[in-house]
Image (cartoon, rainbow over all chains, first blue to last red; front, side):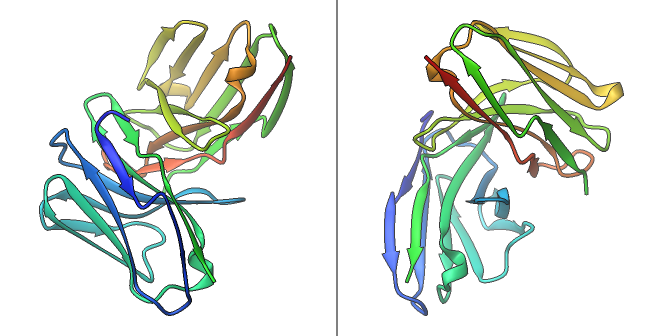
Length: 110
Length: 110
């Protein structure tokens, strides 16, 4: 996966609980992204980061927060999970020749 | 923001056939990427192609930026080519955020 890993790979959580997904890269890239993928909607950007402590919102950021305290780690937090946040979450890094995606996290909110 | 449309939405081929997938975009772009999502969900970067033509084995891509489209050619298709093909372009101008098309689902039958 070109030095990008996501954890956990699968998670089931209850409505109302906080959830944190982790993205880790080993290639020292500046830009990192969180996308969600849903049937009928394709891939949509949640948040992205352009450096340590530098983040910005994407098109579907409500209900999500992110943090990047180190170059290698980009965390996505669902502050109070809802069923509408059941999805597959992908992290990506931007390298010299485009994006590389992690393997995804399948999150189910029950 | 920019709009991205892919066609056809679905394509079924017999092994050995050739195919062309199309990506239209509504505004000028300085880069374009093609991805393949395999049946296991992994997103693979196929091409980073802001303009011109690139080839990688049986796959090739051409972007005509002035006419706002890109084509992905698959020759001598194999069952392992099955999956969904996405194109993605910057959200606007020189943005580091990518917008994805809805994808073309390709099924290659043996």
